[in-house]
Length: 563
View 1 (cartoon, rainbow, N blue to C red):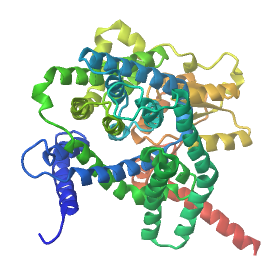
View 2: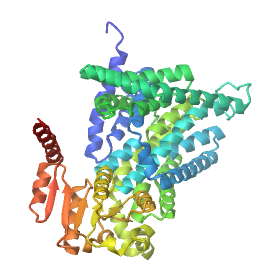
View 3: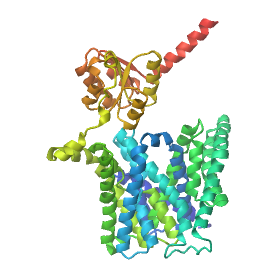
View 4: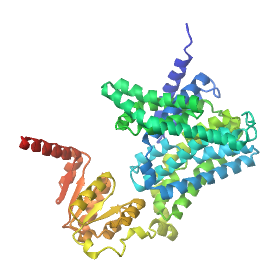
């Protein structure tokens, strides 16, 4: 060829094979991520045939890391974490410690150094946010209590790994086999300087970035140009990440994460997420392909015992630890199984950390190969694990009295406290769900002095409501016992604010059996769903379009009458 086209050939081969193998993985009911990793293996130096430019792929992967972490920051919600903080924070920390201990134990048994064992254990301790979110979305559990706990748990894991990425270089010089030059400074001084740089960067982002980045997005949005808006989002993600690395000596990952967090403050954050999604997805694919290129397939037949132990720690060790922790917090068995299955895999943070460990001379090539192989196995098995949850729960309950008690364990929040005035439980409104819509309904009911009882799956929300003297019960909304505890039998109305159409129909059927005369009000996602529900008597169904039309008409008529 007349000129160097290694960049083009690397991108073309990576995208092309990733597309084909990603489709193949989807047909096999596995996440496409498995296909992307295998595509990297096929064009890497460990397999015969075409070999892409590993150096260029590594730089493209760095951009992928920036955009991945930018997306994590853009979707990071402190309120979501705080809603499940009582279980997510201690649970994630203890589970990380357990996984690190298991990984370090295995690596020490193999004769690895302390530094290699530590990095290996950390890589096995953190699950993939991408894989978890896809699995929960596929099962319709993303907005359920189980889903929120699992996502909150992953947020804590991600934050811990961000801290690890910052501190590991400072400690690397003290660990055996590190290629980091030994510092003449005391450890406390090195760590203090590292933390000082991080604090300076965070302070800069909170003081300047929090004001400047959303305003910049607003300025660009005023231009009306879609491509300029997308360019602004990508420029902020990559520019802040690069500037953070150069000016504050922090990782690209941390810089991009905070850029996303600050961009979230903008009223255009949802548009920023939507506009940048195709580019983030494209470079994320290149990131996973580049990780696959570093994999040496010979690990499969040279160290099958080590690979089996690695996969066992990920699929069984982490799962059992998470299930035990959730049960200790007195959550039911189905919640424990959902969280356990969601954490039984490793992904993008493991790859980022493994790359850093290798760059610091801590993690051997064999360790990186085991981590990648463990990721391939665990991600491929994750869909099957989630699919087996319901049959497994049913099988356990039919054969074990302990499983039955754990599945329907006593919960002090499942019954209204004795302090609730009995007069409050006659002619009241039962409000199902206390999200943004439920809170709005509750505010209007309070203004109108209408009595109500909240039925909500999130125990933390119920605890907060009870502290504010609001009658509330916690439980599975698909279980009639929850509506019974909310005294639906003597209620005048049932207001359903959940977005799950299947659950909504179940609630309607249960309410009709327990109280035929209660009026039922609910929101449908679209007109088609509303038309199906309107065939049932006694229902008032509102769609977002009809509600908006009513508000617009009200304001228009008020304006006309004032003239």
